[in-house]
Structure formats: structure tokens, C-alpha cells
Image 1 (tube, rainbow, N blue to C red):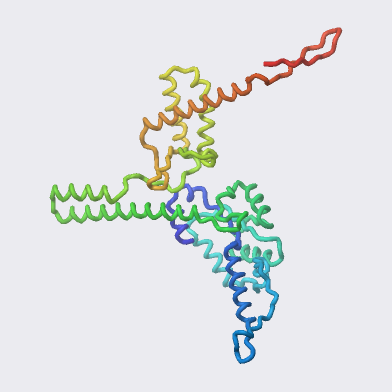
Image 2 (image 1 turned 90 degrees about the vertical axis):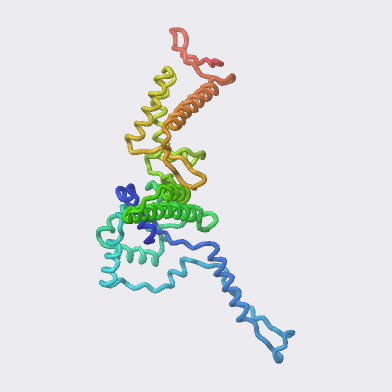
Length: 357
């Protein structure tokens, strides 16, 4: 938790917009299986008795009824909870005040049972009045809580728990740790290089060969690309996949393409290039960047080649034009029909005629 806070402290968007916390204690399926296996072994060993001088041929097994299911709710209900005293309230308040990033919303998700209501009130008493106004509680199980969180715009597919398999998703966490290792390695490498440069400069030793060799070694040991671990809301990301097309920055980029597509179709080649640069400028004016996924680094990097960027935008215009033509072609395909309404005359009523197109 402390490491996550230190990472968020370095993020400008997180400091500006705040942090959304989802507190939802869950019990994993693999943990339930391990608990049941331990209970089974314990019951089997305790139920084995020896008779007739300890002969292994006369071993009796005492049948015991054991519960193979592990109820997470009942285990919590058996825990005795005491009301927090003044010292505990003061410690909890100081703890939330010491968090180095602003929390704009805290979602507490617990089952709708008396014991969990007591836990919810415990958190509300401890966190203080300032954070208490930003708390939203959700009662229910599984799907009910997910639907409630989706009502507040929280992408539930990014939560590290699979509701169907009842297991923890660790893929995003592993990617996050790999990216952070590379970012921190690059940071410490740059720091060491700057310290070595200052040390050599103070020593007054100048050697062209040594400087050239150090430059080559620095380029080989350090990465020159600026790695971005998480795109912002206004960034346009270039990577195949439906989930990436639903990124807010990509949706804003598609709206810009739709706005200029009519003018782009009727424009000359020079005007098309100007429209492409105009789309790039509009994205950058909103604070967005154009990012591409680097498979070697397993993270996002900024697309700095302006010529390649203009080519990608022009390709998006062509793809959108091709989709429009395909949709028009499918709507005007043979066999499709439309209904025409004829205005009524004096001698006849309104009549509908089916016209094949």
C-alpha cells in the first residue's frame, strides 16, 4: 500500500483528480480449497484410533461429520467487534490524513448482514468527518455490488477478482511490477550517470577516449525511451483490440474523425494533410498524447515521429471512409425494401406501396 501511494504521488493526473478506493473483502476459491483440505486431514488424523495392542490390522476410523464448505461471512460474524475508543479514532483519523494523495471517493462493499453493518460503522467512525462525506456503501453479493459500482462509472473488469471463478487476477499486477522495475532502473541509471559526470568534472580529468567509451556504455545500459505505465484519459493509444477502442481518448479521437470526415472526402491532397495536422493539434490542445505499445518494454511509449503520426491519422481517415462505404453498400443491397406512403386523393385513401431497391 505504501509503495502504491509513492507511485501515485509521482503521477500528475492522480494528484489532480484524486484517488478512487474500492474496499471489498473477498474470499478466494483456492484459499477455500486449502482450508477444506487442511480440515479434512485434521479430521482424518484425529479420528484414527488403534486397538488390540496397536496392531495396524485392527485400525478403527471414527466417522465424523465435517463441513466441507467454508463460509466467509460466518467466519467474520464469529469475530467479536468492540466499539472504537477515542484513541483508536484519533489513530484512524491521523492515518487517513497522512495518506499523501487525495481520495475523492471511497466505496465500501459488504454483505447486507448485521455484523457487516457494524464493520461499516466502524470504518465511518475511524476515518473522520472529512473523508466520511466521500464514502459510498454498497450492500449485497457479487453481481449486485458489480452493478452498483458500474452505476458510478467504475470499470469493474479491472477489479483484481474474477466473480465467475472466484479467483484473484494477478496479470495486471505482474505487468505493473515489471514496468515499475524498468522505470526505476532507468531512473537510477540516469542518476548514476549524472553523478559520475559531476565527479569526473570536479576531478579535472579530461580524456576523449574515456568519455567516448563511457558514452557507449551508458547508451547500452540505459534506456532512451520514456516509458508510460498508464495512459491518461485524453491520450490516444494505438494497439489492436476492442478494449483499447473503448478508451476515452480513443473515443474522443473517433469523434474528431467523424467531424472532419465529410470535408476530408471532398478535399484535395494538400487540404487532407492540413486536416490531419488539425486533428493532431486538437488532441494535443486537450492535453492528450499519441501512445503506442512497445512489446520489447511491455509498456506504452510516446509517438514522437511526427511523420509516422500523420500517416497513422491519415490511415484512420481511410478506414473510417471504408466502413462508411461498407455500411451504405449493405443498406442498398438487393432484397432490401422500403415503404413509401402515397398521399390520399379525393377518391381513395392513403395507400402504402412496397418498393424494391
